[in-house]
Image (cartoon, rainbow, N blue to C red; front, side, top):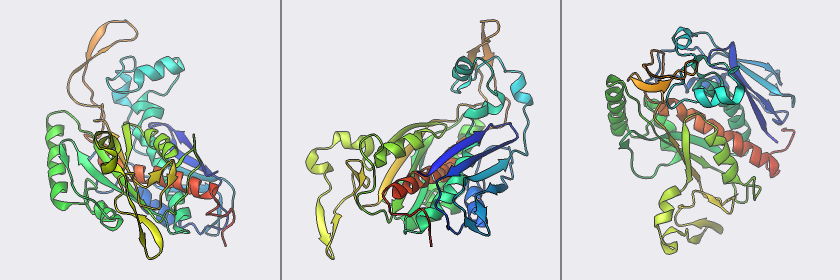
Amino acid sequence: MFVVTSFGESHGACVGSLVDGCPAGLELNAGEVQAFLDKRQRNVLGSPRREPDKLEILSGVFEGFTTGAPICLVIWNRDVDSSAYEEIRHVPRPGHADYAARARYGGFNDYRGGGRFSGRITAGFVAAGGVAKAVLGRIGVEVAAHSLSIGRVSVGGEFTIEKVKRAYESPVRCADPEVSAKMVEEIAKAEAEGDSLGGVVEAIATGLPPGVGDPVFESLDSELAKALVSIPAVKAVGFGEGFGASALRGSENNDQFLSVDGKVSARTNRAGGVLGGLSSGMPLVVRVAFKPTPSIKREQRSVDLMSGKEVKIKLQGRFDPCVVPRAVPVVEAMCSIVLADQCIRCGLIPQVLR
């Protein structure tokens, strides 16, 4: 019911999103949405491409409140340089969608900067997520994310949402200052060697009441997984213990219940706040694994699709040595979008807010 349509390409005129189904009467502060969008860029070690990402809201908001009409969120591309992509137009970059996209669209797709398959389109995801966060705020649901690992450097322990929120003080979006410094060093080392890194982003949502979800095929976790895997470079999604649960016994993995002030809770949260596709009332915890940035400055092997011959390729464009820090607000946004949709479906959020 809360529908987000993404549009735009990396080197096209703009990127953005259209949000349909947002309740009318929501007080929407454009400055707060812009501030959330800024988190995708600010203080992040990454690409030399410097887009201002100034958000324009073209419809669906009047006198500071949503009208119930579709909300059009536009971010203009201002710092575009496509020269590096002309030379390799017919040579697919290893690890990218170039070859698959050419096969799918017959070569008519925009190849510049990856076009539709670029991480640039996630700016529109974050803008829509800013609207979703405002919707969730009406029922006290909060979502926050942070960098759990970059390369072989990871942070341990459990995190409260309050601590996770402070992750934006770190240039790599890590909630632990000491580990943050090591992550910065890890990225710098990989970049100096002409290489790249991947990592894991963890998102936490609190305030979600039990029973939210719509099983079977549109359950809470299946909808979240679909949205999160739609983020470029995501290769795996896990809830709670995730893959780790497969190595546990039932007696170790089960979250045993207890009563706290007359309310049902759980002693642990290995399920990550989801049972049977429905929220359990415990904090939602989801981890998202990102592959290393496929664009690297090392020489690699590919095929010239015009001649059919194998060739060597060395990329010269502008790209991130690690997408994880920039992906943190994207994960936060995607979780917020799904949770807003699920809460509207369950009737927790009415169509008109007063």
